[in-house]
Length: 77
Image (cartoon, rainbow, N blue to C red):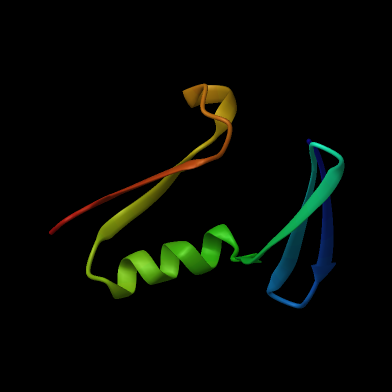
């Protein structure tokens, strides 16, 4: 199976199309999966957390946590 991804960017999001091509006997089968990812900043997410009623949002970076992406923690009052 082969996979090819194509991204189209927008202001706050990007659209991803993943094309999967696989041989099935003497036929080739193609499938397409589409999704949209939102490019939301840490500041925006922290604002959403505060709006939801949580306090002291804090970001923990990968070099400190060992996770691939930043981790957000916050406290319930």
